[in-house]
Structure formats: C-alpha cells, structure tokens
Length: 90
Image (cartoon, rainbow, N blue to C red; front, side):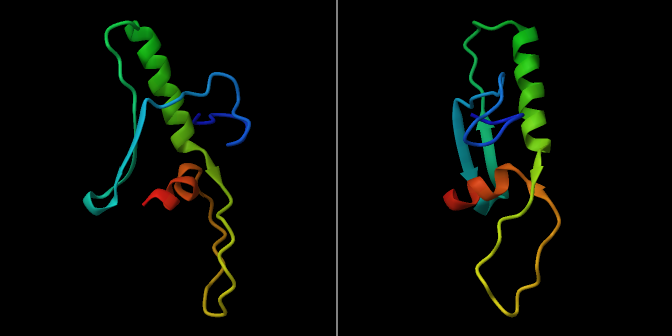
C-alpha cells in the first residue's frame, strides 16, 4: 500500500496498491510504481488512481536519523515519504 493518508504500517482508506515496483538508480529512476490495466477499469477509475499516486508522491516526512557521525550535518528538510522506504532496495 502507498499511504495517501495514515502511516506506512496503517495506510488510510483508498490508498493505492501498486501492481509492480521497479527501481533503476543507475538510469536515474529511483523508483517507479506501475499500475497495470487490462481494459477492466474505466478512464475515470484510472484517473482517480493516478491522482492517488500523485498524493502519495507529494507526501513528505522527517528524514531518518543517520548513524552518529561527528562530521555529518543534521538534515532537517522533509524528504519524500517513499525515499527512505525505497532506499533499502537501491
């Protein structure tokens, strides 16, 4: 689930579920969520799903706390919600 509301462990109602998740960081594609339709959903439903994906990609969270490093500067700027979760796959 890609939570447009709620949390990663408890996504809000109507959060989309991607049919596939692809990454290709070497090609500049950090993450891509794929929605596959075989003609069973109306254009209105697909547009609604696209809007929900956009909502998810716009969500930001506080960045994860890095391991202690005396040379590291603290990062306080919010990051896209998907980035910390998908970083482990890259």
